[in-house]
Amino acid sequence: MSDDVLAAMGISGFGKKLKQRQLDPNRFDKSRREDKEEPSTSALSPTLAPAQAPRPPQEEPEFDPDDIGPLPQPPNAGASDEEGEPEFDASDDEESDLPQFPTTHALVFKDHTKVVSALTLDPSGARVLSGSHDYDCKLWDFGGMDWRCKPFKTWEPAGTYYIHDLKYSNDGQQFLVVSGTMQAKLYDRDGAELATFVKGDPYIRDMKNTAGHVAELRSCAWHPHDPQTFITSSVDSTIRIWDVENKRKQKTVIVVKSKERGARTKVTACGYSPDGSIIGGACWDGALHMWQTKSNFVRPNMTIEGAHTKNTEPGSLVFSVDGRSVLTRGGDDTVKIWDLRAFKKPVATRDGLTTLYPTTNAIFSPDDKYVVTGAGATSKGGKGRLMFMRKDNLESVKELEVDTTPVKVFWHSKINQIVTGLANGQIGVLYSPLTSINGAKLLLNKGPPRKATIEDMSDAVSAPTILTPHALPMFRDGDGLDRGSKRKREKERMDPRKSKRPELPVTGPGRGGRVGASATQHVVQNLVRDTTRDQDVRVAFCPLTPLLRHLGRIAFHLSPAWTGPEVSRVRTVADCLSWAGNGPALSHRRSSEARRRILVSSPPEGEGIMIWPNETGACRSTRRLPRVATEDS
Image 1 (cartoon, rainbow, N blue to C red):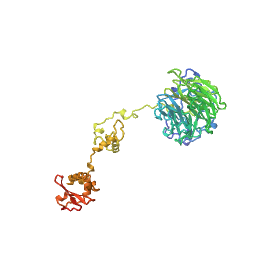
Image 2: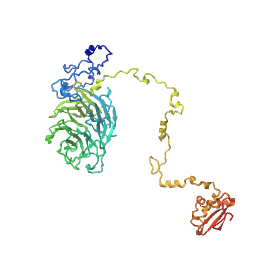
Image 3: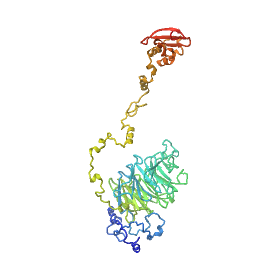
Image 4: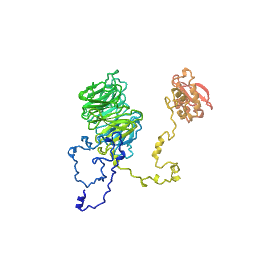
């Protein structure tokens, strides 16, 4: 509430007034650029016009939940009521004192170690996504960063493969990562992987019959209106249309045919028109193709052969806001603008733009009046240039000198800031305190970091930690084991290294420097195998064991008349016990001499063999008896 209302209510002096934070009006001066070539559009000078001079220090009001009165409307409130977010309006006349381009100040992110080959911002302008030749992808958040400018997430999406392209979906909830592999990857807003799309069979010659790409990916693009559809281009001479929900196979395959020998080429850049009705592709053989999305994609609807020099890689293909013009950045050091209504020759051409990296791109400004691209350094260690050219004739309007070669350029329309990826791994954010909104300004609006006090410092810094010897784990009771670490001990017990478990014998072929057990070794091991556990316990404790062993040997020397089916069974001691176990010789109620008798009968002839062993177990006599033999006989 206002002071007048509080005074009328009689509570003007009630409560404690909150301390309002006052920001330094010169907080942006530290990030001001120094441009010596063009003082008119260079860094802001201390002596400025009244409309351009820094405003006097003002106290920024804080939000009061009781203040619910109507807010004053801006002069153009009627035209901006429909817009949900503030967006830079580039339709102002050029005669104003505001800078023409948001390049007066710069902020640098230093975290990549090699050239930044892919760069994009989410639709809201709150986050920056970058990819580099150091194989890493990094996510930066303007609202969450401090003066150190560090990313909040870093990961390797494809191992040791370069990152070629990054694109946010139109709703900003997911983004695509295209690397040197054959598979595109989909991530959510926070960098968690959602899907990895399938790769095709490289042994199939017809590209229409493969489920995915069979060669290195180069670029990608989202459908401007459908967040479930995107396209990818590859070195396998195809552009494939994918559905986010189906990662096992693409929806449609566009096979790009070349007039060169082999009828194949590399599609290094692709893109959608603003209305989603046209798909464009720029190829290695210099051709530029356009397909209507309603066609069958058998052949392109519009084609220009020799749009760029053969055997050069076009870095980007961008449609204008009105959908009538196409901007291409070729690997032949040129930038060209094409009119789809007269798709025969370029409307304007600008050459002499050194291209050192194949992913160098060119973009339109948000007001669709200018073209921005990077020009590489002409000598080793030299400085690069950021070129601002008119869309009509590609004449240079402004050349901004940077430390090294600019590779990727992105001009965000909502925050009116230009983000560039440089060859030395740095990311530069160009902005203007007068025309830019949020973005890099959020970092400086936070003010300088508060000085650390003794209370803020950790105990390890403010006072040394004293440890008594008996407080160490190795001196505690229980041989150094914590009482509450049962689960930890069980986990270490399952670990073969920590538990020092002996290595198990290798079965089959050898591996890991160990010799395996072959079939011959298996037979040799079984020859000397201990058969103690296979022995019958009745044999081990039976007094007739020596006799039964001798009887087994006799069975092999009997004449054919005595080798009946039952006699031939006598081969081992266990067979003798099982065959003669019911005989009178094993009865415990018989005499000692009779208990040693064993009757071996032969069913065919009705006779048997009676054996009287001596004390040593040797056979003493043998005679033929009738089949029915009693104990006293």
